[in-house]
Image: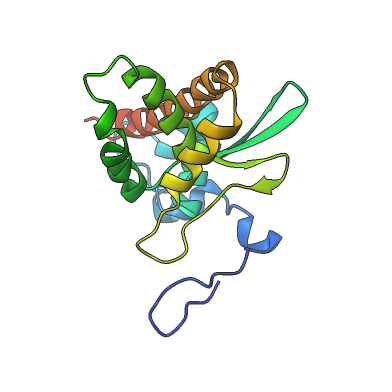
Length: 175
């Protein structure tokens, strides 16, 4: 994928070729010429349960997942750092209120939820607009509390996959 004059990726949707993940060994963990570092070959030690998640984070910068529930398809994606920071500002009015946990579940769902039944949720217009506030408002106005709770659980599961992949990579780096 080529970049524009500012070094940014193009705004159009990636093609299928762009989304193909390269073999894990291409990330440079395996030493050249068959050399094995002390402690064994890092690639062979990397737990297969985490390899796809780690490779997805490495090449795409995020993990994506689809969740099927009550006849609907919910597309989830790990949030950016900017979105996580913005979440604190959106949640601020609910801090120390009885609605704090309810608001946080809806906000976390807004952080991860990108589409419902193939229809994209609101996204940012420019580089400084993440679209999080619009997704949050859409979710609290259109999705029932019990469904938000189920989606919230799935968001936590996706986040746990990220943490597990990173923990496995960290385990490999131990001396």
